[in-house]
Length: 126
Image (cartoon, rainbow, N blue to C red):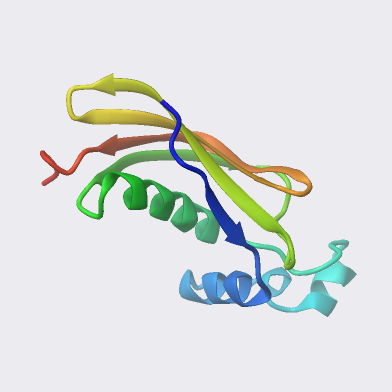
């Protein structure tokens, strides 16, 4: 079963605020000049922000009371300001009240995030 996609504009504000919220003060997440000096064309999103967006995608679909029991993601292509990321999910397994979802988030450069998330549905979430 395919979940509806979630389209997210990747803004400079999203990247910087995600880094600040996760206390990731690496300059490549907020200082474009420093990012360029380190070989990147611009600032880019950190993995903690990506993790949060994946979680939001799934709890928006399954409900705020669902519980993410396991999140296993890998980063690929960076998320730069001005791009758009589309998150897509496919339910790969259902075991009682537990659902496993394959998640892919793609941008203009390719797959930004891939992984699998185990979700406990709200009816039995504690």
